Length: 456
Image (tube, rainbow, N blue to C red; front, side, top):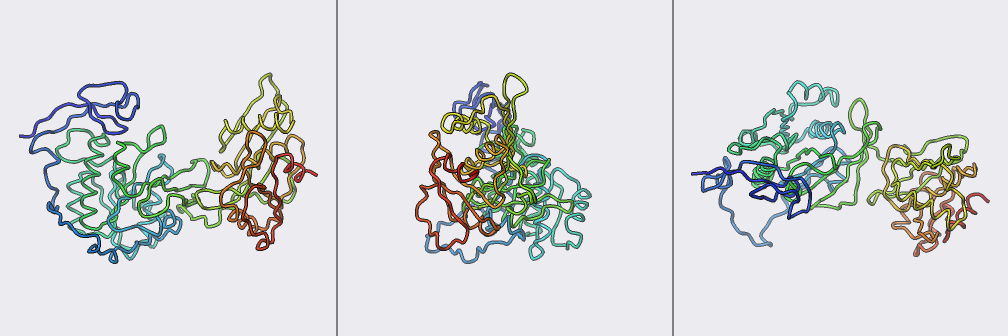
């Protein structure tokens, strides 16, 4: 007989405890234990096979495993293929997470409608068939009958439909809405998410079925549910962006079949998400007249170079305490760069309000943007514009030196492709073949040298 008992489970790592405790002894998080009812005994949920499940596996030698029959599936979206490493791998589980309203359901439905050569089973536990149909008509009016819509939350019923319909691709929106029979917890709880994901995983590996799961995120920005969920899946994708801006970025946090350095960029439009193949041209404001406080940086997101516009405004503080505000750039790093300008370069900014903005709503973490940030601040402070034909890249150290950056040749190529005539790079970047570039490359070792080149 199966027995039920009450335990407390950490919502962050899934650790069980017989009583409630404030701090998890496994992951160290506070106030993450929730009360749940679980089954124990021989007839518990874990000992019951799923419908049609193969309960005996046959060991195979490595040389006897055939991989030729596992070609990647083209998603029909090049930016998504780039992040996945070439497409979806049969039998893989892909977890897509993002904030509410960011466009997760739009992206996966757009992908499902474009896969006309494959039979797609789209399982929704959050929307009705009518709502999905309205979105499908808006995204792709000429969609065919290859995409099957199923509004269901029972894992057992979903697995039964998988064996009946035999789809080529399975999409579940979202994993937090699924529930297994025999589990007393509510949908979205740690136990339900863990057991539902494990059941879907077993069927996906047995049927060689690629599965794309949509997951919610919590207020801290990480994927909701137990941490074991991210360990179970093969690929974890993060869909980022500000709902008030039109750009969206999809990046790979974990990928067993490719690199985690690639990103995909999309633009949200009325007809869905449009791929941005050349983000540099869209992130640069094309203005005829030169204005102070603007500098162009050759940045890198993952392994993808693109040029972004850094905007700064430095003005006399109207109140006793000067303000420091930053959008898309780390505020603590901005304060550090201002201290470097004050101490090493002799610019008096202690009584100035400084505002910094990265155009396009992007959040940039590449340290190579430092040189463009200090140049834009100085340009605004002196009211001298930086030439629109010049871009910069370099990390600024605490002693005022310009430190070398990675993939410098890719940054130079991107600047040359977009018609820039001069690029300022760190002096200590070695191994550059200057002869193969038409753009003028100027190397600087200190921020004072860079400022003399900009405003001389």
